[in-house]
Length: 335
Image 1 (cartoon, rainbow, N blue to C red):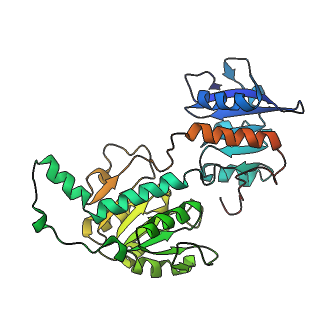
Image 2 (image 1 turned 180 degrees about the vertical axis):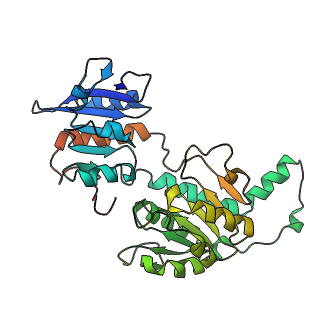
Image 3 (image 1 turned 30 degrees about the vertical axis):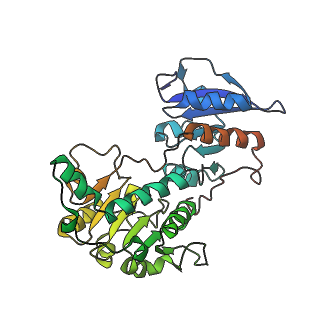
């Protein structure tokens, strides 16, 4: 039995629309209080009474607003009609929705594009200028004369490979192009895309890897992308290349990545996502050579809760008209 209240991750409310109809909404998120405040600005909201989310109450839920939700709770939402993800990904709900295809799924598509692309830009420049080495010198109070540095080619002579040219991938391409970089990318339908010099189908991934100095992963986590990056892909990369992952940790075979870093198969990695988060304190990645770790900041915006809850409120107003609902996902594709 799930508990309610502000001290936990659940909040159950009734939302009343302009025509008087009611939708029962379950929010599962650490910041559910902030989400409810935003929704109240757009729609009339009433808290559902009771200290426990018992089976009877849960069976009347129409809408779930969450980034992920325990399977045992999902199974009790027997009247669930619509899931809106608080983030851009819906991988946490794919299994449930494929068993229940009547459920509509929406997500905050594009909301993380600028922040995720900024993380890629940060990592690109950090590795280009060997910032990890400069930080080690700083910790030792050591000033390395610039005349001792290995001269690096201009960033404008480098190639950025973007694996997955969705909204995040296209934003990465735009930032890279502003630096003067050559940009190549993969997309299921290889068409001409702004700021991308060459678009390859997924089957030609190794061609992209062989050309790229930086490889940014920006694919959704679906069956075809899970563990798509393994030993074969690292071997196809340049030994001087850097992997940057702002997608999902499960896209990469982490054991193979550790081997590639330790053996010098690739030059380094910037990792914002992992298969297990938070990253355990005893994870070997903390001590992996030439590795920059950030704690999944690629989706962070100062207005994250405001933006995602506003999207939900606007979708609540027009549900179930899927022509007007924003961020509609295709379960068969996984995004």
